[in-house]
View 1 (cartoon, one colour):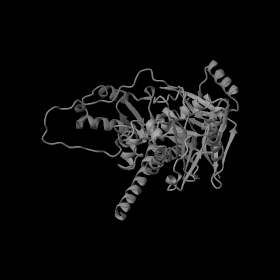
View 2 (cartoon, helix red, strand yellow; view 1 turned 30 degrees about the vertical axis):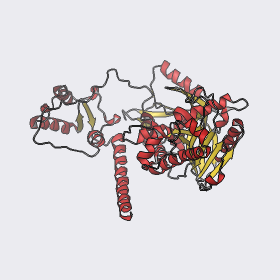
View 3 (cartoon, one colour; view 1 turned 120 degrees about the vertical axis):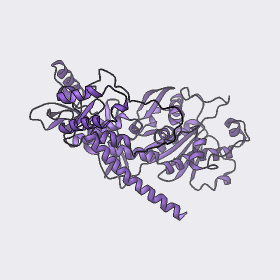
View 4 (tube, helix red, strand yellow; view 1 turned 180 degrees about the horizontal axis):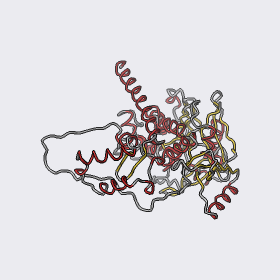
Length: 498
């Protein structure tokens, strides 16, 4: 079976990258994109998620020109269209969403060395200094691959690294030629580096651009490099392979704040004191270290990628990105965002029930949402204090208890007079003492029960059936409880064995 690793748009074309679950062979091929929209049709098989009384029929277009003309026509005649899933995500939904078959991705833990003669920090946007070394830890073979312009002085010193493949080169161009061959032959799914987005990936891309006789598109399996803006200049994608900054994924998924996010500090915090890099304290800087003891410097650079591998073994950051991507029907790097993962996931789940999401930019708020009430603290000492920790309060007591979901929301025009009056009577007050009153609570309870609705602050939600978002939250929470139970069991087992 072919397992999806990536689906994306590059230029005017759309591609999918799959890996065979048995042979582990990678195949990259063009796909035929489909633009999908929905329009009102009293006999349609689909329903609008916000108002299920609106029936819809599906409209498919097989090129962007026809899709654009359809949108323009519908707008010109004042007719509303629904749905707007991008072709690549529709392709994932139709062919790979909720696929159970899995295969290990090939990860390269990656680092480069750039030694400057003037001891300045190399600028990744200019990339005027040669790349003197490329280090790779390949997850499939457990081999450390070092491509270097510096040769070992004492080869016996490195015999302890039985998984080391070392290649010495006389020119930077020949070093890159071998690197390109490795990319084409081994086809890594993910290349990850610490601060890769800030340094390694833009530096190596710009450096290849600066070397005469080499085309930077060879970094990509489809020979396409795409650019995007960053706070420091320009970032790059090597289309067809994931470039993942492990430092950014650490910040995203590990919620413990750190005093420093340097690899030195994180390796000590996560892997233990002494399990960090090779110490070169006898030198003033890394440039002098490189010039003073090349063999020790090579060991230092080996440890960089070994530490990345150890961090992934412990924290499973990239593995988590893969799990989330497979669950939600997105690409691995989409998990670094918040809106896209949930938008695609809800869209995919809804479409299984023939429910269609709004069109893009539909129903923009005319007024900003008022923030939550924050009570002023009582100053001074108190004799009795109680701290209450409610398990997953926001999704359970908020979304689940109030059945908060777009299709369950009752719009202003549809509110019975009694509910409108109830809201106007109480929702303007930010004094909790108004609500912590048996008479008030009984009044609210009686009215919302009469209409079978949930009442939050200024909003009502139907309770005649469970909303799609509360249901998804409940399923994820149930899975989380099972997973956490297993985690605690294995932790207890590990403690007994040690």
